[in-house]
Length: 111
Image 1 (cartoon, rainbow, N blue to C red):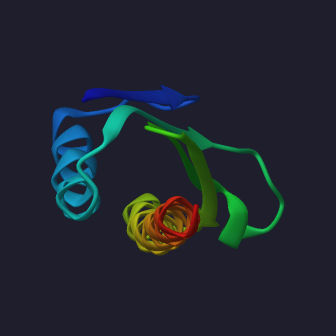
Image 2 (cartoon, rainbow, N blue to C red):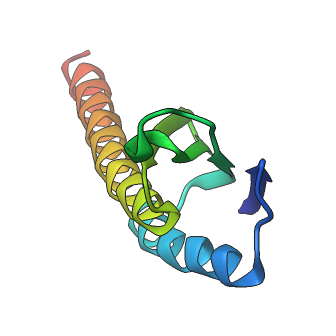
Image 3 (cartoon, rainbow, N blue to C red):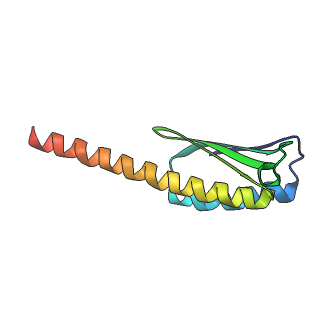
């Protein structure tokens, strides 16, 4: 799995990099077919404080890709929300894959 963590209008410190990668372990343990993960942390000049810090992730997995974006006033909280959303999307993606596999096996059994 390739992991790329980059920052837009902010410097990604080693502590922040370690925090993101330690949180991503939870998602990669749940789904082992992850090919590439790109995380972009950014500081935006928004008027609302709640939307200044944003985190987005694009995860390339076998069979598709998953994209998630969150905003929060604290960057670490934005990363936590991002991981929660990503985890839910990975579970949903796995369920769809299982559904597809079961349907294809049933089709083969009837023929």
